[in-house]
Length: 169
Image (cartoon, rainbow, N blue to C red; front, side):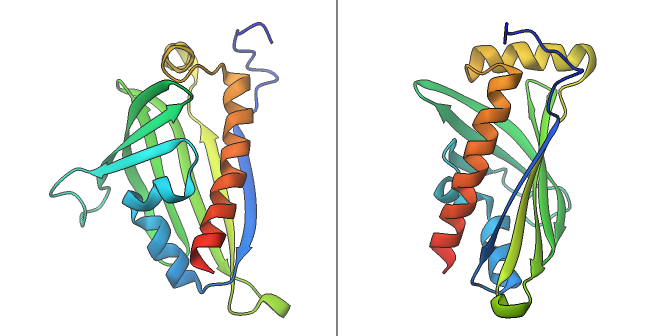
């Protein structure tokens, strides 16, 4: 790719899934404690919950990230905390919408009864003029073009789900 954002061929959403041998309540509790995100995510190195907002609707947290030598932070707002079925948060940087990240949980059936089927999803929110500014910011801060971001996120989602499974089983 030449580094430009081609919206016609751009991938705007990703999903990855895994089955975790733990009940949905346990998986939800782990995922919704955003301070634990560095345990699972290869890109997140820290999360700080804004004081006084932890137990309110739409709590805020700051996500600290890295890609090689590059470091940056994002402002995140919990958008869905529907225990034990879904947890999601929106991500912005410098007031620019970046992405929606989330996890959908459902009890597994059949031979995996008692386990949880976990689907992690990512929706790219970088659209329009503000989206182009966010794309540029991503190139500078994280070192990734929109096409590279999709590859990075897919790899990161796979790693996140494997680490979550390993930690909870």
